[in-house]
Length: 311
Image (cartoon, rainbow, N blue to C red):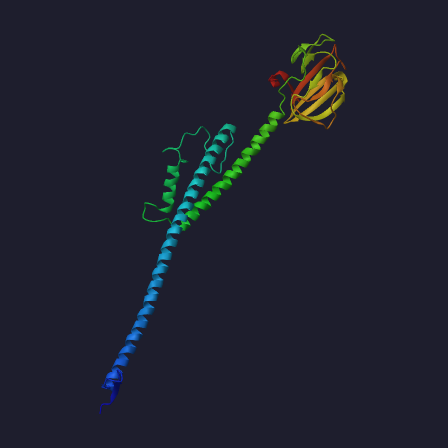
């Protein structure tokens, strides 16, 4: 037996009351339908929210991906630029080694003049862009793996270490050459007149032929005598027929001797510089007149001092 609900509608005082009978089953059906609709609407709302959230996340990921690609491009360009700079350093290193006759067996560097790189200047912006493009895969369907860039960076670090070691060797070589030049006699030790050259001559006392181991430069007593190169004073005293004598050790096996002096202006242990006043010309020892006897000895062997006078 069906049950009914009676719905009474009272519009106002003057109107008749209206009654409506609604079956209980109909009311239940409406309620169920409403609940089902509300539940479906809730599920749809949740799903829509998730879809919107995923879309926003996907947009963020795309933006981050674009930013990462741009950063990767910048890293690749820097790696390419560093690669080219190291290539220039290595070419410069090779040129220096060609000049100095040094070799590097580890890298088997070429000795001799180097031409320009084939294909134009590798330091140009176009060349850097091309290398960076190759590194990032632009125009090849996608970026290169990050581990490939890491491999290139490790290789560059190794090259930089070898270049640093090589350039340090060159720096030591040039420093040594600088010291060698500073220590090589190259100027006249005194002003005056050269009265006797290096070589065989007649002894002024005996007339016999003897070996003259230096140059004789005549001038007035007290004429300044200067060091022809940097060095260390190792002797300053009387020495037999040399009279008052001074010896300067310039290193590299080179020593200079100054004899027949009238005075010393330096003492043993003093370091002297090229052009520094070290003594005064005199007439002491076995001498026939005021003059400087000047010798240059290399590893103890007398050499012609004129070979060491550049001015």
